[in-house]
Image (cartoon, rainbow, N blue to C red):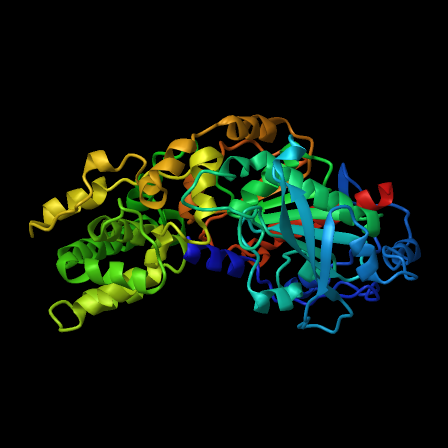
Length: 527
């Protein structure tokens, strides 16, 4: 999952101009790019039922409010320390691609392990806060750990909307990821993992919303998140609909169980049809499958090397995860990674053209590692909590080797998989969990069932964005018709890691920005 997270971060690195508190008087330009990046968010107010119709609120009224969101007579650090649950505040180094007076902080909250039982104990949760002085704010949740120091330093690069509107920006680390973990958490033991629930995480974020509202009010929030963070964004809207004025989940899947079907049917039969056309997409799918067959044919040369590479990188594999099983999994998931991220079909072709050369096997190994490093299936991976949540509530796709197994039989080389059909059941969790943890975590569909009902009935303002060429698009919640407050936009050519507002049509991007700004400013006006 490490590759997934790295590309998830790149999904939202929109390097557009960040405006400061004093930049309130820009005008629209007629060019497409300038209009999108110079939205006037502080001079117009809107009726939420008519988002394009301005009210009579004046520019002066909004401008004056925007500069008084935090009291000027008390240092901002002291105000942050006074928030309930805050245990420390540290100002981070800050650089910007624009001329801005924004300040960048790491705020540590002490949060309950179980919001239904305060006696269960606490943990500390990291939250990045970039203050610009605006009356609007973006709350972003990646669903995993906070990015490294480089990305924290460039806080104005992380927020999809904050980067365009000059909003304040809050970036919360998900509970039990990164440094936001309870003391004594151990991947090999079941202790504490039962507290890693969707509801507890939503309560964490709700508390953060409430506390920042104390110093930012009046304020208009947009909540955003990508992939797993997109799931969290939807869940927040369901559990705490009043936290944000509008919710914008990006490429958010929600599988119907810990091993949902049809994921690999899409990868081997339909993925890419809309983006490349059925004929070209079929060629690419066949190319990926050909590479997978070649990788299995060279397993005797490569499987121990792949395993050893993981050990040397610090991976800790379960007793179940032998070199043979790990290698089979890496070959299968090569198809997932290829379609999910770079779709580097030319690189695959170049390697296949090297058949018979001395370093052919080496190049196969390079591509396998580039797609998924071995520690993806390590018990000590920093993304282990994702596997817990997948098995417990959020779901994950099945691991279906039937297409690869059939291709190997057709090839006639005699090369075979070690993983048999009866081993596919719960394979991911057997590989990454100790038997003790595996037995302690059981699946509960309650959250997903509630979300299906929620998306049909919610009054919240929601914009879902998907990529039509995304492998995870097949794992989304059931589609619902668009309505005034809830719309879904699918970008046919986009994969999982590259949906930007610039990928939308002019009309779609214009509608998204108008809806976000409208909802935020209505919240400001309502105080």
